[in-house]
Length: 116
Image (cartoon, rainbow, N blue to C red; front, top):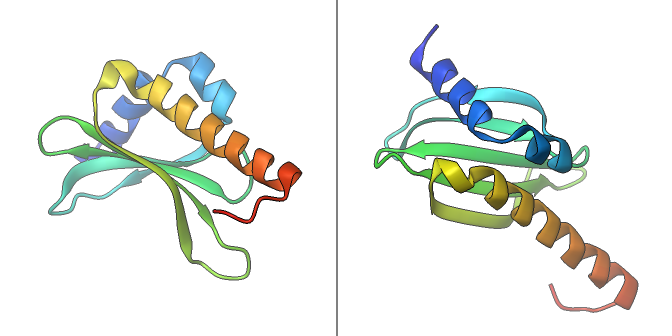
């Protein structure tokens, strides 16, 4: 097993099962190493077009990015990010990130607000 797959499995093990169920985590994949991070896990959450990347940084903290894919293109629209996340709060950060963004979007649709 190579290091990137091991890092991705470790990340998924550090997310509590209740948080995985609450955010609808599925379709996971390992991320390859780059100059900015050692590896990571990418997965789909909540709906068809929402994803989350969790990257293991070189200082042993996580960087989390929650984004959606624009319909009709492959453009990434970042909904929320978090840096310097430790493993013991990773599940909480993912849950809060996905719920807060979804609540914000639901409120915007119901109130007809024009701000983004």
